[in-house]
Length: 186
Image (cartoon, rainbow, N blue to C red; front, side):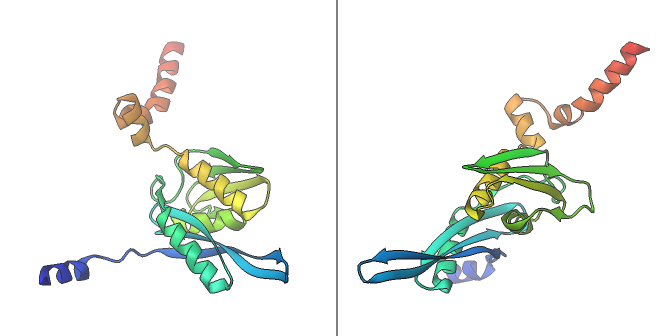
């Protein structure tokens, strides 16, 4: 029994960062009038490559935020990051009428993104990225479009595993092809 207690104490609690993206007051018309409730959208991440989003609805704002946070923690996914600061490659995502373009950026650029996308990148741990939202500015659609794009990112390790090659073959391929062209011209 004492071993179980010791194990619980030694386990590290995950440091999750929560960001409230949007609160919406919604009304349901019923026979006696309108019933007001609140919908909340929350993004949760560990700033090391894991991120999730959730939405919750309740009669009071704090309850809605709690529900959204719990859903976000359940739906966390791991996103591969290059050097722990930016994306591996440019990517497009869409959901409904929301379309987003995410581009890698050199060190020192910062997070150039608006609204819900900025919240996602901050909790994900991305430090350098350029993002553009096209189409719908609905926070639900923008978040889902951003997640669609993030889930499409492949790291060189993932590509190498799919192709059955080494990571060095995949990464150095661009430089190698440029060298071959120069040799052929000479």
